[in-house]
Length: 167
Image 1 (cartoon, rainbow, N blue to C red):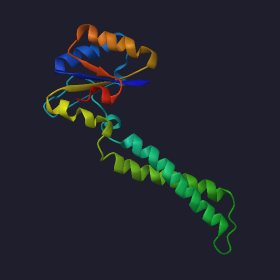
Image 2: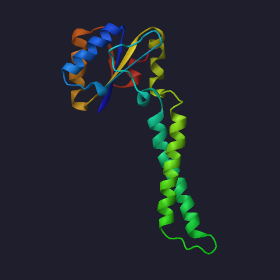
Image 3: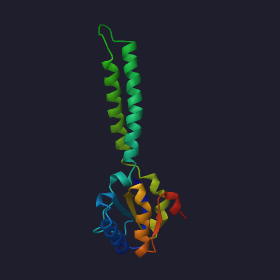
């Protein structure tokens, strides 16, 4: 899947693009709209917490770092077992799993409070009243989706990489 970023000037044009994309087989669950506070975005699939925040990135890092920390803790317990307790390989597995779970929880709580930095380049567009529509499409259909949008909406700015839309 590839994310296509589309900047549109009005809610009406965004609504029409959403309808056209749904007509060519892009499901509503793959469409995510984001705008400034001036827009209500009625009848347009809104961006969820997964698109607006660093939640997914935080969970990925938390699982990795927590898993490593848990593995190291498990190694310490195996190397230096508490008095009178026989510790086996299960301590490594339990430590890794506990560390990954705890890391994912902590970083998820932190990541949900942080805005998605991939959207930083669109702040000027939001301030100017534009709407960002993100469409997750199969790689082989990116050209078709772009052509579908530009066919009826030449005012749209389209890119598959954030930097291609920055000014």
